[in-house]
Figure 1 (cartoon, one colour):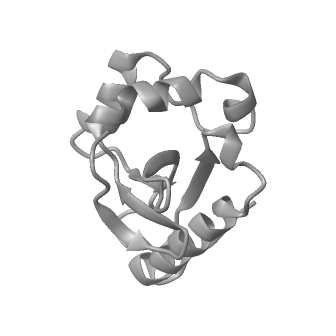
Figure 2 (tube, helix red, strand yellow):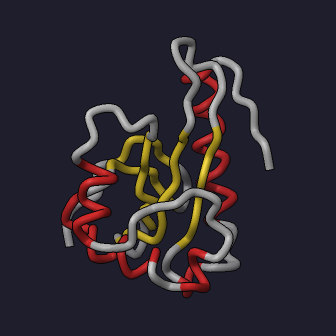
Length: 131
């Protein structure tokens, strides 16, 4: 397993740089109906599609982070900002899912949201969260 490169540090989790070495893990999560049933954005579910979606777009309008469990040293989900409105970047939406089911119900998604919203607030200057 590759090393975590933290971008935003939390107590139990970090939000790190997404890693092409984890594409098979992301693919497993996104192809699991329990994991993806509430996602409101369409993400390609093939390895090739994910590689293009995450790593081969010049300007995708997405900022993706892997949710990394500090103690277990494992990627457990993804989160990010999307539909960032240009040129001001003053509004956007967020997405989050915990792909590893054994981590469900442990409030790790809440911690990831707090990190992402705090980042979005400083990055976007005016974060508008729509649920």
